[in-house]
Amino acid sequence: MNWQAIALSLKLAVCVAAILLAAGLPIAYWVTFSRWRWKFLIEAIVALPIVLPPTVLGYYILMGLGPRHAGGRIWQALFGHTLPFTFAGLLVASVLYSLPFAVQPFSAGFEAVDRRLIEASWTLGASRLETFFRVILPLSAAGAVTGVVLSFAHTIGEFGVVLMVGGNIPGVTRTVSIDIYDQVQAANYDAANRTALILLLFSFVVLAVIYGTNRRALSIWRRP
Amino acid sequence: MRKRIYAAPWVSACAVLLAVALLYFLSTESVNARQQAGSKACGTVTVAAASDLTYAMNEIAANFQKATGCTVRLSLGSSGNFLTQIENGAPFDVFFSADISYPQKLEAMGLAAPGSTYLYGIGKIVLWTRKGSRVDVTQGFSALRDSSIEKISIANPAHAPYGRAAEEALRQAGVYESVKSRLVLGENISQAAEFVESGNADVGIVALSLAVSPAMKDKGVSWIIPENLYTPIQQGMVVVRAAANPQAAQQLLDYVKMPATAALLERYGFALPSKIPAARKP
View 1: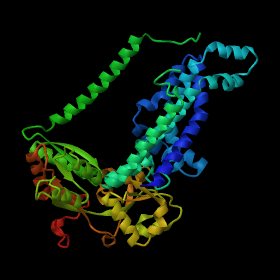
View 2: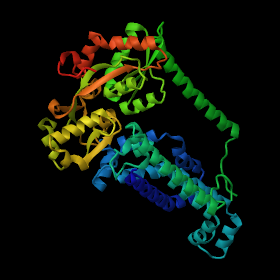
View 3: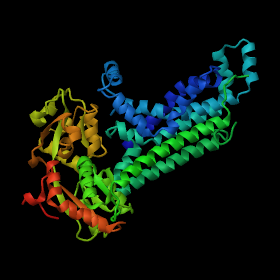
View 4: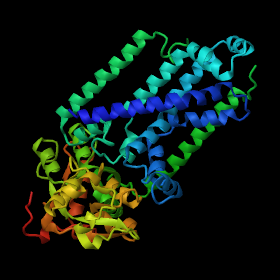
């Protein structure tokens, strides 16, 4: 059993979920309440990773952000190294790749908040920020939880992008899904089986706990 | 309250349908064009080949297609993965492995045609970098001690034969400990090469057969790693027992044994078993 890989996947997923909570909420807020005419273009961009194969994202990160292209050279000048084969690289890839899994539930949650309550808050003198934290967010907590859980889960399950840009470095980019793939390739079925089983149980338990404690959590299934 | 522009649902439905139809049309068009090239009597032979053969195999397949009229359907990937897939019933007719022990294992398990394992060549590894790189690979392994080299790419030694050879050579040369923390592992030898080619790794240990291919030859500099540093990479092929087209599979096996194909493999940097008396025959 490769605990190092499991720990790495957990670390990656926690970081991605945290970043998407911080970055996803403003994006979702904007997507929900903006009246900009071309908003649908942004919505389409946010939803892209649902449709695009991970290989497309992997390709762009490997080539576009590699040292042979401008994007990669700029990154290198700023941070001293290129993205592929680093934990930061996996983090950037995973955040992009899981973006819709956070933003869409967040946005669905905001959408379900009674518009009159928001306006009442404004007319009572609360600022937009205060209204967001004291009215909108508490009323759409289920959507926020869903978004965080989904982006966490989606990152644990990520495989294609990591295979393409990770470079399989133990403790840095060898996530649990890559580890299982390696074990299967090397015909270590026992090891693969043990890790796969752990992952299966873990995923089931996490989702069961979420469903059990927050019956409205996954608003994809049931709108709050 | 919120003003949004909604196109009529049927407009977007039509647009999506049109896009899908276009993609489908384009894809079937090119498949048809390829299949018309060579499907006479003998049908299709489905081939799984180790990724060090990426370029050589395309040439062999094209020649074989021309000579026999059989269509070759080629899958490239890592030998370990193909072994697992064939063990689990993958519909391949012929398996070109980078490690002869895999075909031998299939034969022992009764999953390959008895006696069909054939040693088609012995692979070599090279230290490779892009042209213009600050790494001077012609100095050999001592070039790797340079601490400004951040990433060194090899195939995954856990399951890729070329990765095993690379690790062994690094150990034998006494540089493994100093490069260990800078290794990145490709899923197969092609990916290890691609990591260097794209500039994401500074230098890599790749198959000679890739380094001399038309696609990579002019892009980089290679240094052939002394063969006494690693166990010879004996590459074997086998006809899969459950082949859907056993005749065509046997034809391909015979074709690979012919001098013209051997010469082609030699051109791609493989040592030929017939010319190396020391090589263990399967």
